[in-house]
Length: 121
Image (cartoon, rainbow, N blue to C red; front, side, top):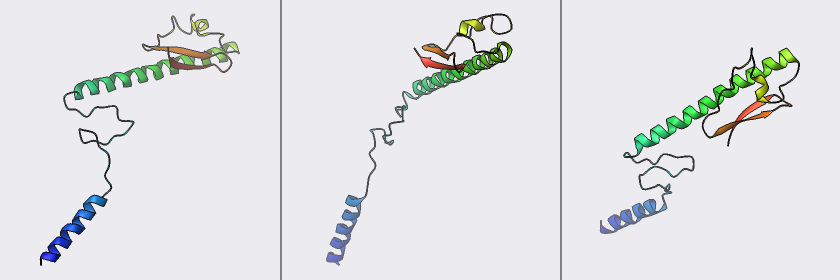
């Protein structure tokens, strides 16, 4: 009986020792490079608001870019060419003024293809 108990403990110890474990951080969540949240309940509101602000900035950039790209295509259809620069779109029938890019971003315009992108400054 005693030998069986010792053997059972040794086998259980081997299973536990051989078990592949995943590295975890101090909060118990997995360490993944894509995780930007700290996992700390105290900082959860700040993490949430930061994510919301980032999503809003991304959405604003996409909407403004789509609007400008649509206007560039309209200019191309009406004028038979792409504008030399985005300021050429500021006139009646197009824009009264160019939409401002999101904070910390700028417009990158390629006059050969008529493509507008929003890029970091």
